[in-house]
Length: 348
Image 1 (spheres, helix red, strand yellow):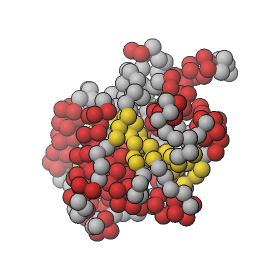
Image 2: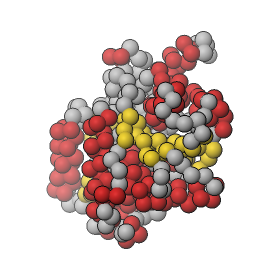
Image 3: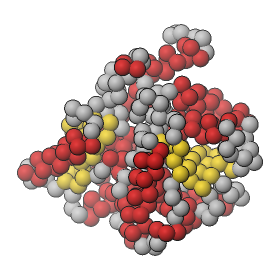
Image 4: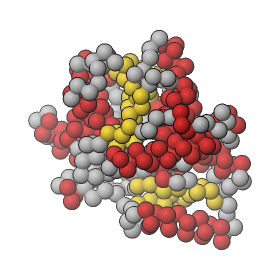
């Protein structure tokens, strides 16, 4: 396998911790829960995108790029970490960002726009291009027009797709599966299941391929946070195939992706009651800080399956904490509203 042959720049703090969650496990009545703390990956307040960016920016540097262009929502974790990584490497960065979710349309309070990830993008020195909508056509046109404009100005742009989810970025989570295998062996634990939020699909796909290589008997589950589960699964399967080809691995050895639905709620980045419940459960048992866009909904999906009896109470389950805590701060007004109902305590 050609993983070690790929261009890579060191950006994160590895390995990230692998921690047991006995109080959360007890609160849910089993199974035995563990968490992989990729929220502690170091760079730019941490998160899963650091692993992808090590490989993506490794290629960018090899190609002689001086500017990186990527996209995401206004509160994108990927955009924030790309800006941080480019700052570390001395590269310019242009973020082509889509409008935030319309919380008001769902009866939710909205905070100021210039905060959390978007604020940090500017702190890290990113140039920001704001798009009118988040359709795939608008995003692709925005990326290509931005890159072309940079070329006309004599720059050498390198374009990273949404979430860093292509074969090169996905390789970062193949490497993560190898890291998990070494840590699990050191802890004397065999994981029956791994759960992860499935958005752009690269993290899930890397774990899917990596588990087939390094974690025999471990089933990877995605919890969709933005798409119908069958659409998300097809996206993951395509990324597995392209990444396997990049690494010289036979894709037939990898099972099809499993993606669970039911956690998206009204839409991407619109918080749900189940997501808030999961966030509070993690915080009040294990002091884990999740977010309402990705990890909160992913844990809500896992909790739902536990309550349905789908997972054995004696199984070992690893939850991937992919970071994103600035997303919690971005939706503080909605959280305050939920807490007032859940705890019966209003603003202090």
